[in-house]
Amino acid sequence: MADQGQGDGGIHPVARNQPPFAQFLGLRLLSAHPDRVEAEMPVVPELINRNGVLHGGAIMGIADNVGGTGAFMNLAEGEGTTTVESKTNFLRAVPAGDLLRAVAVPLHIGRKTQIWQTTLYRGDGKVAAIVTQTQLTLRAGDR
Image 1: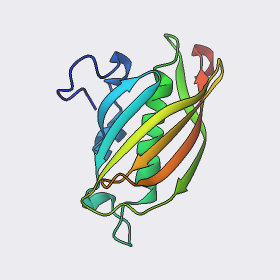
Image 2 (image 1 turned 45 degrees about the vertical axis):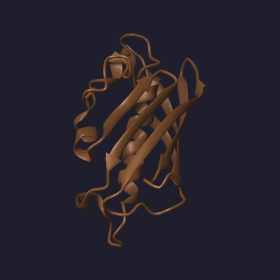
Image 3 (image 1 turned 180 degrees about the vertical axis):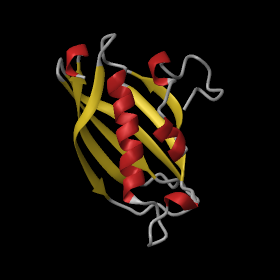
């Protein structure tokens, strides 16, 4: 989602325009730069699974969006990106009512691919999940 009062210095201009899916999840960017993206998301009832905790798909969704945002900031004008691989390690459940925080950093930024790792933290600071994703660079003729 947009800057939401964080000031122009904390969010790269390319990252300000978040897709509707990020807005649906309640994602709020805290900072966004080509080498690090931070966001948070409230764990609302609509995102809870049958066990009463945050659904794994919501965790994967926020990680994909945050990592993709980082990748997008490292593209040349006219290029796009798409996720071609994603791996999630779920370490701890995230309870309803909590605030999930995501921190994405690049492991590799190449001409054709980027690899981003997103660590997701519960409100108590413990790691809930780690997601590693590969982003493919799309050039104008690829779309």
